[in-house]
Image 1 (cartoon, rainbow, N blue to C red):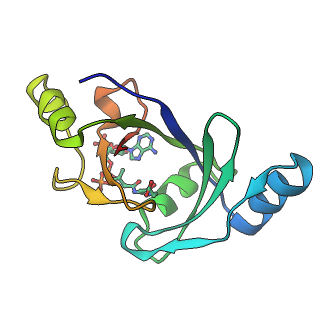
Image 2 (image 1 turned 60 degrees about the horizontal axis):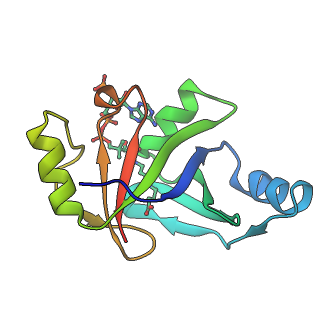
Length: 135
Ligand code: CMX
């Protein structure tokens, strides 16, 4: 496999409305509407930059995995980075063969942009949660 572009950096926040306002009003950035993703336990807002995106994440629902993250980081913090790959199954199989752990059931699911995504175990990647997205 060969890693592609940085698709986005995700930042978990305790108040998505306030974070969206900050990026729009203080940074002058273009921001998306709120996009709830109940199956992933998050509501997101995308901030468009010239060369990449920032994904603001707020916990959605009582079992949200991002709620645990906000408990540990009440001010918010960088939650994951997302790299693009050409073929997500090929990338997954190679990473697994190299000993890396894939989170969840290991099968790609459909992300917010309709593309296939997977998350890699942070303990195998220097403490960073990595999302792969097939572009
Ligand atoms: N940073 C560092 N470590 C993290 C982490 C983070 N953001 N999130 C979890 N971990 C650690 C956990 O502490 C755990 O460590 P141990 O094994 O030592 O206990 C390990 O990683 C596994 O975490 P988990 O929560 O037990 O794993 P799950 O399989 O239950 O969860 C995960 C998978 C990480 C994808 C889920 O918890 C999550 O964060 N979901 C949110 C997904 C998301 O951001 N979606 C946005 C939309 C994406 C899109 O469409 O583009």
